[in-house]
Amino acid sequence: MTDANDHPQQDAAVDDLPSRRTPPAVAVVDAQFPGNVGTISRAMKNFGFSNLLLIDPPELDPDGEAYGFAGHARDDVLPNATEISFDELVSDYHTIGCTAVTNENDRSHMRFPFSTPADLAERLPTVEAPTALVFGRERVGLTNEELAHIDEICAIPASEEYPVLNLGQAATITLYELRSLALDKDETQLPDLERVRADEATVDRLYDQWADLLEEINHPPEKREKTMRMLRRVYGRADLTEREANTFLGLLRRATERPAEQD
View 1 (spheres, rainbow, N blue to C red):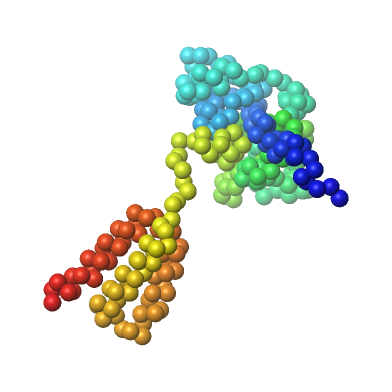
View 2: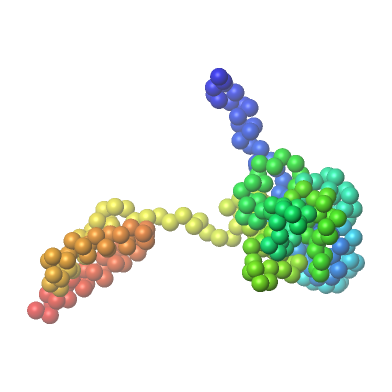
């Protein structure tokens, strides 16, 4: 049996693999409307994707709809798009066809089972091959013949009554769910979401202040223990910050002092 510490350099290389992989490419097959290509380019820019592949695209006039819909992606993602054939796409990439699945099963669908975008976000970091997310036409999506050559499919969970999404919407939702493959947490505009919980001494003072208030307002003695237990559960779930705890302390202290002031 080999100890993992026997090969520190090899282990480090394995650990580094996800960071060296490039995000999936985005392939659009036979889009009919330039605006949808622009919308997909913009979504790619929003969520950190850059490699746009176009199969039989419409004309993309720099003064037309595609560039108008692309936002800042008109500066890099859209003009750097690569036009390739469908055969080249399935030959060079591990392909994931994004399509609506309408309650079909292994007997009636060309590719089954399917993954959701959230499933892919967890699994794709372990896929070694270059990967492409493939979106089809506005009206009919990907044909059965195309799906037969694609490696797997992905579907967005939606209403059973109407699961079909607009091409631009489908791409935007999918890329949002997969943003962790292209963006690190410190590369988004959101601040650090980790909350700094108030220290235990402050929280304990809060509980003491509640106990003082219950006594001051003559809360029935036989109910105080149960009330304090409930308050601990509520505050425990809330993970109060230092500022929140101190604000409550001030309010409770004032509430406790008021009856004495009135007397």
